[in-house]
Length: 280
Image 1 (cartoon, rainbow, N blue to C red):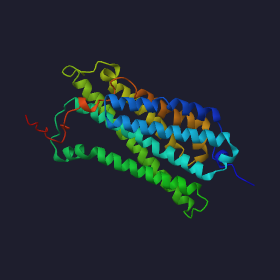
Image 2 (image 1 turned 120 degrees about the vertical axis):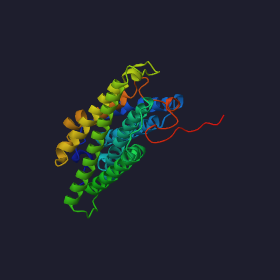
Image 3 (image 1 turned 120 degrees about the horizontal axis):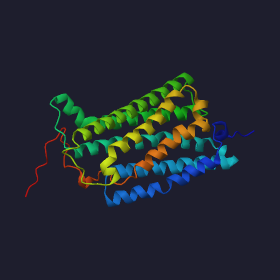
Image 4 (image 1 turned 45 degrees about the horizontal axis):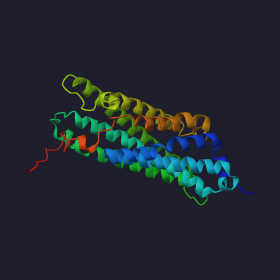
């Protein structure tokens, strides 16, 4: 007798999967348009994230709607890999955008050599930690679903916990960086006036607070249910606490003037580099 792996994994609501697929479809080309009109790699990252989410929810819908595809274990594994890999793109986009807005304040560099070194390499550290969390999570997910896995269940559970913990820590770091941005923008509000007077240009730091809260909701949910995978996959919880916060966060990125384009950024980061000398 054949097994419907998708149904056994908790895939039930075809309507929800279709709604989320449709919701992401206009967002993906929107970020391509933004990248063309005012380039920054953040727009490319968000485009890739939305494309991954379209593929993941489309596969989910296909698996739910078709019994034969629901019996395709490989398709379920691909869907889980896409869901795991996608979130870090959203998180890194938020972290990078906050750092870019911080550059616009032209803050004085830290006096400590160690602090300046951290400022120089913080994006790299964040990226490497996130990439490691993705890799560990993918190993755990594929081994948990694979018929031929020889990895002990306790090891799989430990890997899943490590991946979730790293993501939670990175999400907290991003939230703290956002609060720092809010504080510095308040301090400089009398002497600093953003050139872009759009809602994102003026109130961008607070929009990033909302984005940070949404991502924290998502990660706290996954951390709280990491030891109870059945509850974590329950669509009654997964959609409102896992999938919806991501979608709302991406929509907030559409606020005009929120993300500084490359042309509006300084030619250097004042935290750790000297200005680039421009020859006449």
